[in-house]
Image: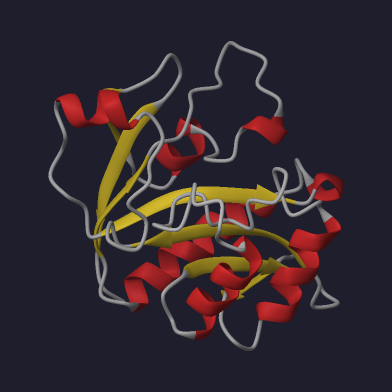
Length: 188
């Protein structure tokens, strides 16, 4: 299926919200706020916080839509200030690389469409949006999956192998299977 991508913004909020609601709030109610500063605060309504961020241009993602305009996945990205939370923070901070201009933190693919290229389309969309915003150093912390069974539902940062196909280079290992990967992306 040919996927379309677009930015998560006012015009696509309803499609994003429908995807999240269709999937139990994604990971038990995260609403893809887990890497934003609001994460972990029990008094915060994650849906409301995410919607406010989207409507005030303080949240970024490439939303993947099917031919009917129904959202089937996304790739979240943003500046380190927008997304200060990262996986494997303790190990990352031991020898932190230069601060990136952009971080890619989270992917989600509707369970009915896993293995159909949605994550790839989401990454391509995010990289295009980053290039349109001026490009720069882009960082992510995906997992190596070669040689092991890694269920897709647990790969919310996708795979090192996928990032390498788009020119990302491994920096250093920060978890059993997790690597910091980065690349410089030219402006569009």
